[in-house]
Image 1 (spheres, rainbow, N blue to C red):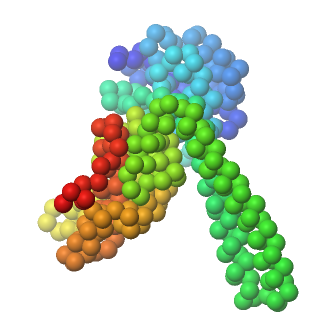
Image 2 (image 1 turned 30 degrees about the vertical axis):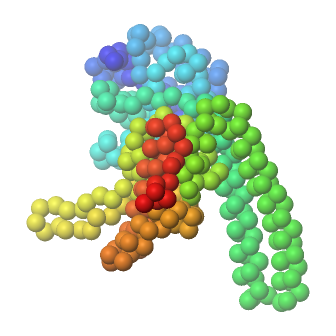
Image 3 (image 1 turned 135 degrees about the horizontal axis):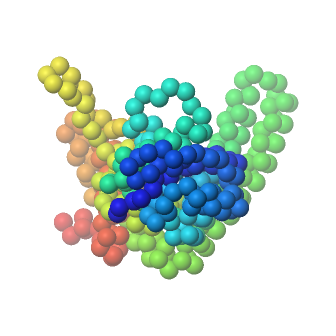
Length: 332
């Protein structure tokens, strides 16, 4: 698309800084507005007075929930925009000295201008997926709270009197029981949201037909892939999760090991790791593959990573095919 204007938006909790570049990359101005619907209306009035708004491209740095209001506003007004990770923008713009919101907005606008030919546009997921995402985030916080309460009460035993330790343990158990009830309620709500959405229910049934995939893995995959519309292959999603191995070599002197990258969604990576334990126990084909690779002398962590990728490939296969997983080991 031939964009006429490039608009970079640096989003904070209360404000947004907006920088405008022309078609040829010329700087036209920067201004700050409130991060609210009224602020966005004022922003559009200012933009219409500064530059031609026939085919604008908005670009934002991903700042979590802070950028949600402006994304909703842009989509509501049929304006195209791109949501980019902060690390992607930072590493693409060379050495930077100093930092402020106006300079960041200009850098974001410059990024949009330089990558106008191949920049990926963004579209918000459905309301159901946003609800799943918020519930899963809250569930993660509850799980961390439960683990913290369990750990702290055990550690206190070595460094305190028996009476104090007994009281702390009893009080911790009371809070842990309440947290467990909240987690169970969230799990029930997750199932309810999925069951009420026809497309999510179809995808959920397909994904959970793969052995080793339960409610948590399926829900996280639905959220991170926007209902399997954000990634068109399991290999790209594997790279996104940090499961794809990459070479590390240069010339004749550098011969590093092939490793997975630390740049990835570590939450999804950990959740898939929890699922492969169930797959190894319950799927004869996965179990045989795991045992065979270990007998060949492969390192255990390399084999586990291969099993994670095999699980992802099965999940994407059943979704692309539109039919449930069929275990082939029984026919061998």
